[in-house]
Image 1 (cartoon, rainbow, N blue to C red):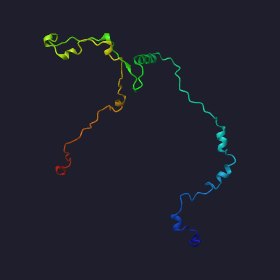
Image 2: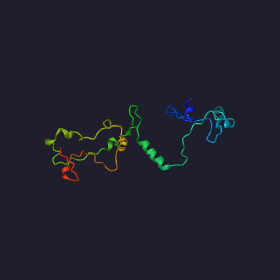
Image 3: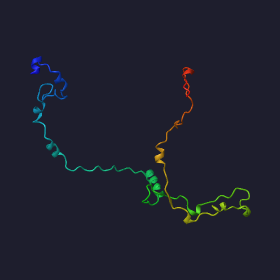
Image 4: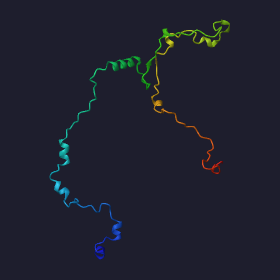
Length: 177
């Protein structure tokens, strides 16, 4: 009734409370009824899903079909350096590179170091080569992978500037607290 009195103009109340999809109708812009015309030619979703294969084949990993003797030699050398796994360690241990018989101790270079009169108790350490039970059979190397991720090519200046900033315009603009 309100539209009839205003000459088919919407009232301010109708404009204010109008929804965003109130202008949508059942027709396309060309005036055709889109879904009703396409309904017969469009297959149902159940027909599409029934046509798909039931079980998909799993994706297989790529297999290297080329002989790589150099890469195989590097991998074999890396495996030879590794020791048996330890359940409580997150890093695969490596074999300790030094054997008991290969230790060589340097001769003392200080004048009079071999004199028993001037011998100290700290010189007892390292005076004899270690025996087999004193050498570790494996060690757990840290490759530094985590720390290397934070390295920059150029070091940044992260220091604190404590100098008083002076004005480049005039010395009256300097703020000295």
